[in-house]
Image (cartoon, rainbow, N blue to C red):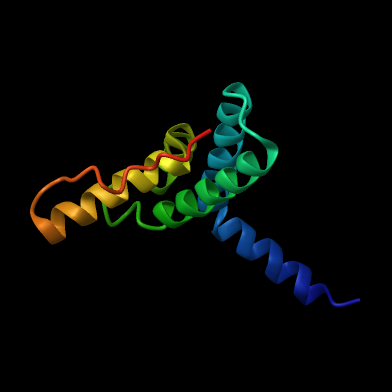
Length: 113
């Protein structure tokens, strides 16, 4: 039995626990919000996974923004609460503002169920 694999895996999990927790918090909150809103299962699963990935990405940048790594669960909760569609709308607005110098609503997501 190779104990090095398990030791390395547990060490990686311990080192990345805040990011993992952030992703799980985002997945959980997003799933519950979508279930509450009566969204289809496929939408709930995909949206929740997108929120989890975004939250894990943002939690890696916590120190860059001057926030402690322990606040990652807050980031995960906020990302999950906003949801993938709202995050996409925010990202589109930021990109449009940078490119055009204005905030346009052309990229507004109309396929929310």
